[in-house]
Length: 191
Image 1: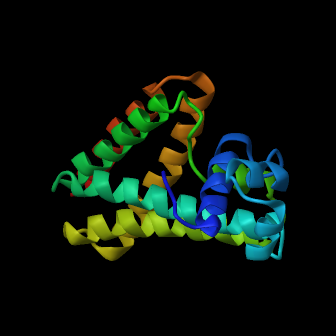
Image 2: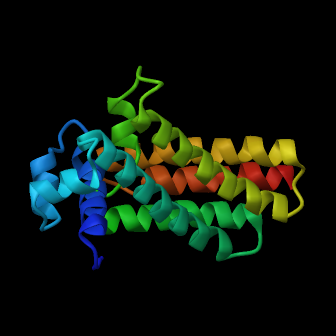
């Protein structure tokens, strides 16, 4: 992705690095290097340092993943088929990345567990809520009652998150494809 501003390059570079090697494994100097920016520029845009960059990177990842979800959810009218389409698209994207570009918040979320008040945990929680709301909106738009739509959306995102990590570890699409098929059946059972 070509970005025009130094700020954007820093955010995108940090997002990719955190996605691939986690928050703990990503250094501020590495972010600057990957962004083709000076260390001074990083601190200029993010005076809060690494944590501030990470929060912006997680928000960027949230939005990228939301775009991917929207694409899949909008690809078909039937909600059950749309959920399966999400899983298939995630599987294709993950395989195409060589199993490195999984969920943009998982690594940061897991590494910062136990710090509920941290801006990173808050950004991760916001990302999960955003994605659940996208799925819920699709289900609500298809006539699902609100409580069921919200519960199913949480189940979909929770299951896809776990399946994506398993797919990365096993280096196969199978966990995501299996999750998609079963989530599709679950959604169809509520229709």
